Amino acid sequence: MGATFDFAGKIVLVTGGGSGIGLATATEFARAGAKVAIAGRKADRLETAAAKIREATGGEVFCVAADVRNMEQCQALIAAVVAHYGRLDVLVNNAGGARHAALRNASLETWRQDLSLNLDSAFFCAQAAYPHLKAAAAETGQTAVVNISSLAGNNGTMGCGAYSAAKAGLQMLTRVAAAEWGPKGIRVNAVAAGMIATPLAKANWAKTGFDAARACTAFPLRRPGEPEEVAQAVLFMASSSASYITGETLIVGGGPQIKGMIDTDD
Image (cartoon, rainbow, N blue to C red):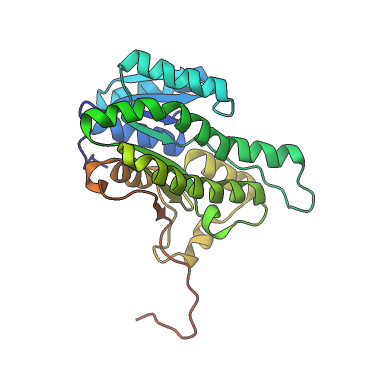
């Protein structure tokens, strides 16, 4: 999937950039001309991802190992990216994940971990990035934050109550940040991903016996999404093509799951 946007000269940071949607997003930004920074907890995974991005795009990639659940590490992450590249134009808060547990017996640790990884991390990184995004916007006119949410944040997912609550909170954080930071030239949007066939997701489906093909019969497009399809939505939200869009959540989920009362097939 080729780039359709121009990010030449832009500096982009993608958290959770070592695999899945984060890796696909960083790759697409690099293909579109951006200088990319990727962050994650495991330095070896980041270096492997960076090598893949360079091979696929010939682009420049900077790796920073950081646990984005920790405010101080988020501050150090942003500082490292700005020290390396001199500025920051786009922040993609992609780090996330879910622990499966029914609400009736979910532990406090599970609750706190899911909120920390999916919601706190975005707040920590965005707050640390704010002065740098503001400074870059003063020069270029606009900068952008894109938060990676989930359809769980729109509709909820049983067995993932903490994750669903965190992603719903992330969408509201997106709206409030957009309202507060818009006057400074910083647009803040979210992309809510549906069932996406990342390598980790496919491994989990195989492990649990989940029939993704059958589940997708409820989707109008009848298939799981690909990480690159989410990445393209992120690039759109970060691009000048979305220059008058802020505070919104774009759903990338294969269409609405609407039940009908009559047969509408041809």
